[in-house]
Structures are given as structure tokens and as C-alpha cells.
Image (cartoon, rainbow, N blue to C red; front, side, top):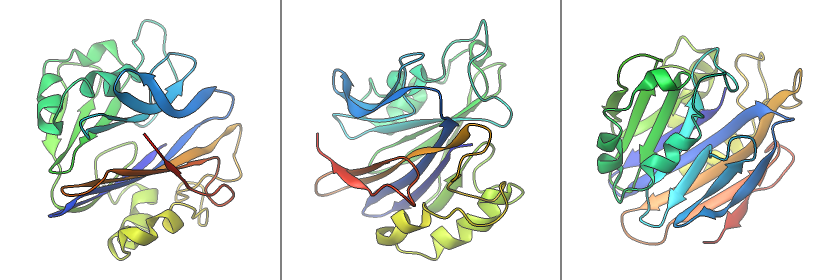
Length: 228
């Protein structure tokens, strides 16, 4: 399962994320593959796991528990961040998806954020998505509800992120200690599944947006700045 951690504060939003995926699913490192949208590209379905648009809106897609990979008759969930990133504000983007028919997709968590607010949309293959604005402070999302302490990964790592300045969050993303269910960085991979990349995004209310990217397990590959 992928992980996203957000710090929502008065001066902006900071995001840290690890992407967990089958190692044989091909993808391209972040670039502007779509006009005005910069992010990683899935070669299988053409969508994205996480991307940023020219207006400073960020969107990322996570699978919910037990729904790894495509399913016949379902649309690719990787198209949902791209739909959100057609808009100029996170709130507008979240509201634009309120009428989405989630039965067309496998279950998902969709995070949408800008410098002023962040939202979680989740779909469970029936009806419209549930939309919630995330509270100020630190929120961690994986394959279920945000900050769900019944999920071992969240129970182990959320307190650590809350106790650590965002300037040190890159270090936290490298942690592969604990049981497999607790590990934030799935390295080494198991049965062809593991952490394939990591991302840090700073969305300030004043100043320049910054992104850093690490291709591969973050305890091996360094973060490098992304310029766009």
C-alpha cells in the first residue's frame, strides 16, 4: 500500500509520499506528460500516481485495501488525479468530482491539496465518493481511513511524523524496520512488490513550490530536486 503524509499549517502544506507497487509495472519518472501537469506516468494505463499542476494543486491516488492492480471492466484509477488537476484550486477540484460514479473504478483514496487546504475523496465501488476536508496538523493516509491507528503502518509511523519537523521527513520515509505490515519503506521487495519511489512536495502560501523525488527505495536512492 502507498502512503501519504500531509502537514497542513498556516503557512502552507507539506507532503511526503512513498509509492508501493509491483516492480514489473512500468512507469516514467515525473515530467510534463500532460499540458500543465507534472507527475509520474504509468505506462500500462497512462495515468498518474501523483502529480502537480501549473496552479499549484497536487493530487495523488492510493489503492484501498485489497484492490491492487487493474480489473476487467473497471476504469484506471490513475486518471482521477488528472481530472482533479484540470482545476485551479483544491476545493474546486474536490467538488468537481462529487458526482463521480465510483462503481466504474476499483476502491480508491484520492488526495487533493493546494497551499490553503487539502481533501480526501474515497470511493468504494458504489455511489458517489465521500469527500472530507483534512484538518490542520499531520495526517497519514494509506489503504483505509486517514489516521486509522488500527492500520499497523499508521500506528507505528504517524506519531513519528507528528514529532518530527518536516525538514526531516525524508529520513522518516526511508524506515524499513518493523514487521512487514508496519514498514513504511518496503525494501527489500517481497514477491515482486515494494516501494518504487518517493516524493516530497512543499506548497507554501508565499514563495516557490518545491518538489524532491527519489526513484527506488529511499534508503538507497537520494532525493533530488524536480524543476518545472
